[in-house]
Length: 399
Image 1: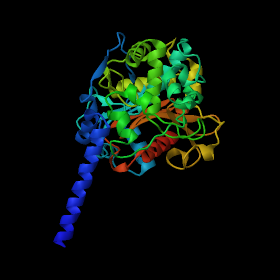
Image 2 (image 1 turned 45 degrees about the vertical axis):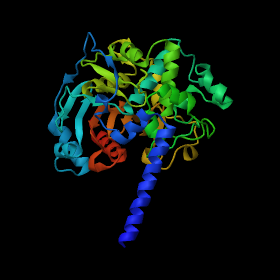
Image 3 (image 1 turned 135 degrees about the horizontal axis):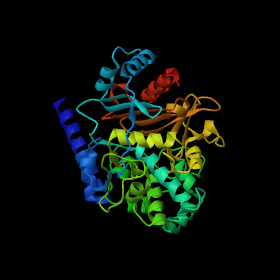
Image 4 (image 1 turned 30 degrees about the horizontal axis):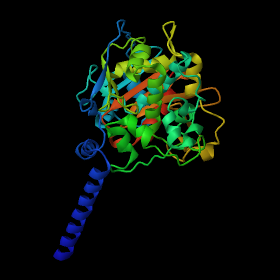
């Protein structure tokens, strides 16, 4: 038995050594070092990357206070059969939880050492910002249309594979480009590449491969926001972070500084890297709740807000989406980097959603924003149950 155990150990060491040799021969050493040293992404990664600073607004906006925290607690407890909602949030690694209705804060609490001025990271809620920047760039004439082939802006893709000319900006926004994406837990997995690679521009332009037809299947894919970031950069003549500062961060009155994490070549981590305070992220939710209008100034065209957040009825639902998460019951959808739930023919809820349980949940019918940022999903295990909690709470909340 001892010999068998020894042989198994030697075999395992050979496998690990082989994997390390493969990794360092195939990929940049800095990338491989990040994967092995940092492991899975966490909410404090903003401390590890270079960053582009986002400055506070000269005219900070502050929500009105209409605190009714006992009522909010009791309603969450009623719909989820919890005994203590605050204890539930703390146990499940929440950092910030805010409920806003009619532009007034009803509930605002922080947990696990966080406070109102604590930095939280967006993870994939950043994708909803990226989509919005595309909409603004279209409204300003920098980009002609979501139907533009991406090769109009990234011609080197067509030089590598002419099939890239069949992919439109809309296909990237819808997560249905047909570009290969494999969530493999090693250096050759696309999750790791799109998060830790030191040159994301090069990765998106040289390592992407087409394996399907555009528009046929939904496949969550972090190459899409990277390609959109390149399009924004070339079309607007400025960095995505500068564009965010000018077009969103400043106009909607962000009261705290923020940042956008960068790769080693100064390109923004488009898939995940916006960092700020929870109360400021809630303002982004308010912007969409008000159809792009910010106190009389149309920051985003109302037409874009509607187009970006409402379901696409032209897709073949059963074949387009996988049978899981919010798609399992036939109510859920994905549109322009927003997740949505169809309540009835007239009403939808939609949300920006990020890894480890980052949510900006918006219910126009109830004039409501629910914001949750956390260190992890907690014992609730994944986004599904958080979404169900928000949805059921919203059902019971008075308009």
